[in-house]
Image 1 (tube, rainbow, N blue to C red):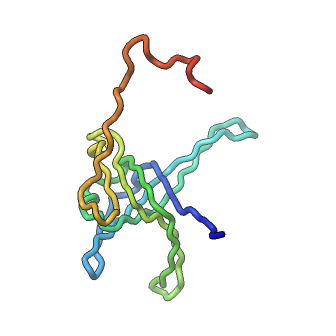
Image 2: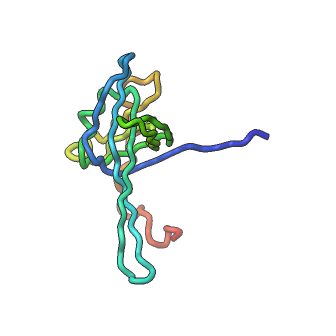
Image 3: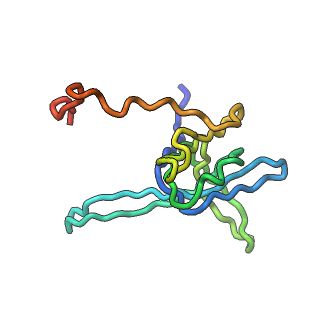
Length: 154
């Protein structure tokens, strides 16, 4: 029986810095940025709310057109995989780093906050243009046909 494994990351957070795009020797675009995600919980001993921020470095291959939209503070959805690699720093010391290799990047928020709300960017080789997202469902049901408190299972 073959063993199975999953390497999938989904982040929704805010950009910690403007994205930077560089090019490899073969002129392949590499866009890098960081995403901050927050976790909030209530301390069991003190009863106070606490919060921590986690920073994730993200790499998007062939995303040459997205950097102008990926600016500090904007909310973003990132889907991809974790990758750990090593390199030698300027002193010759081996450094290990783990980053998210993005397959999809979608700007969230309104036009003023996160860019166009219905555009996403994909790393899939056959797609060079932004990926269209499905149309949103109607915002609210007609009066009298909504979901009430008795209909929600929790």
